[in-house]
View 1 (tube, protein in one colour):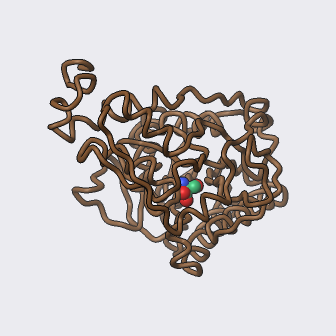
View 2 (view 1 turned 120 degrees about the vertical axis):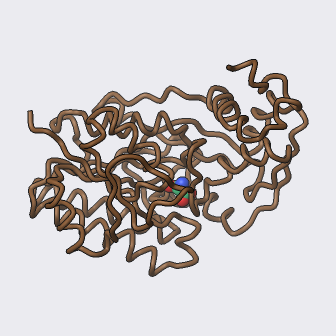
Amino acid sequence: MKQEKILVIGAFGQLGTELVPALRALYGEANVIASDVREPSPLNSIQGPYVSFDVLDKKALETVVRRHHITQIYLLAAMLSATGEQFPTKAWDLNMQSLINVLEVAKDQHLNKVFWPSSIAVFGKSSPKKDCPQDGPFDPTTVYGISKIAGEHWCNYYFQKYGVDVRSIRYPGLISYTAMPGGGTTDYAVDIFHQALAKNEYTCFLHHQTALPMMYMPDAVRATLELMEAPAYLIKNRHSYNIAGVSFTPAELAEAIRTYLPDFVMNYRPDSRQSIADSWPDSIDDTAAFRDWGWEARYGISAMTREMLQHLAARYPSTGERSELLHPAVFA
Ligand code: SER
């Protein structure tokens, strides 16, 4: 079997931070090159092979791919929904041109596989709220969502026309304890854990009853690897797959946190992100991913909340005094 050499673009982001170690565990550290436009710093320290370049610079991308004998690319660099609304043309340029550059290089240098993330942001007001189906309708309300649905078509185009083996997942909001998300509408579901542990209080930028599709990072990493490891003939969809994790409202998440921090106080002050959240589905139908490559989520809200709090508690030393359940002795 040909030895794979993988380039992860956007390695310092929320997903990249976790996907790089998972890929290295599978393929070996030397075979996974982390890359980002940012230089490494104490905040985003990364072990192992690393290159810094701008994916919008196609020549630089070509050089990195050739120099490192890359056979697969994971393109994770993107501007998310909320930030994208502040910088619409910049979001479009980054999200689209990065993908076109990667697909072109994959075609020209005959790469084995490409991974590109899409999002629940491809859906909009006319999409069903509950168990939103794989095939739409799509009417994105954000530049981020427009770039994702356009990108899905580009992926399918490069597969149909040039045979590029590009695979994609529509991620829900991702929840993790290692890296913070950057500029999304679902970011509250990570911030809340830090604020609950630091201050026992959080002011949510969404309404208490706004349900959104979410996923705990270990499920998201496993979904990505399972999709990429599946034999090509199983991947019937070359646009992008819906995957469901867990759906909940801010009020339900606050309640789950109160299992561990009974005095936790949640306030609500919806801002401009509310209208984005209102346009997205509450929950996702992922039967196509289950049927084609066997996808099934493992984490519900209880297990996810427990793990998030237990992992983060060490960073907030007073937590043990406030919660017996989060005392280091309990889960050591
Ligand atoms: N988490 C993303 C966002 O909120 C959705 O894909 O923008």
